[in-house]
Amino acid sequence: MFLPEKIVFCVDIGEEAGSGLLTHPPVTRLEWAKRLMKRFVFQKSRLNPAHQFGICTAGVITLWHAQFSSDENAIDKAIEQIQSEDERTEWNMQTLFEALAEHIPNNESDYVLRVILIYCRSNVPPPPTREYKYLLDNPRLFFDCVYLHDKESAENNVQAIYDALIQLEDEGKNQLFEVTRERRRFTIAMTKLLAHPQQRYPGDDSTWLLQPSPAVL
Image (cartoon, rainbow, N blue to C red; front, side, top):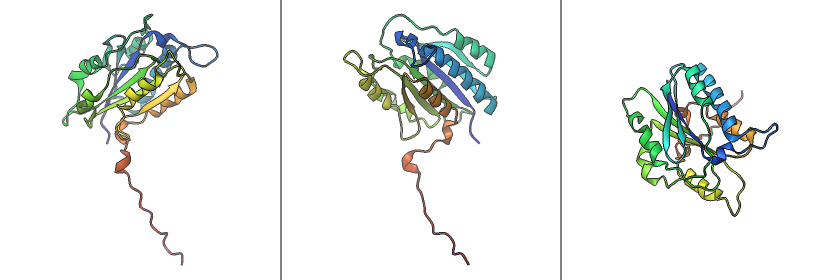
């Protein structure tokens, strides 16, 4: 039996969150993220009403926007109130882990904690994540990321950002989805994240054994 989840959406509200996706009619990254988060909360709540959801915003620092709750209406209202900023800034990822400190589960906890980071910047890499490895090694803490960005260019630094985010992956325990500006890929990524993270298996823990079929008489 899988433990209930405490899921915190960490939503990038930097300038690029207001940039458009490749879709018609036009829709911004943040607008579509709101729709997908609401759908996610609705579907996860049907799978297990004990799941709780919280929201943090990532500007210059991480701030709590809505504390954990299983009240769908309250979470939907909080999602709708998220607004993007007009400045291009660097996000201090350390403040996310500081915000989550009191919610980090231990072996006796009756829940697992999952972060779903929606990162929208094309030219401002987050700081290295090595110092958080001891937290990421926690078997009851999962860190997933959906990365939206513009094309690589002289002004953008997409590869450096991807290299920083990929450090959060841990042999199948945490997941990173690079969706660029495609609405369809963004939707598919959020749909895949509906599965409970305790169902994931590290790649090196899985083995296959082929056995011959029994003889047919």
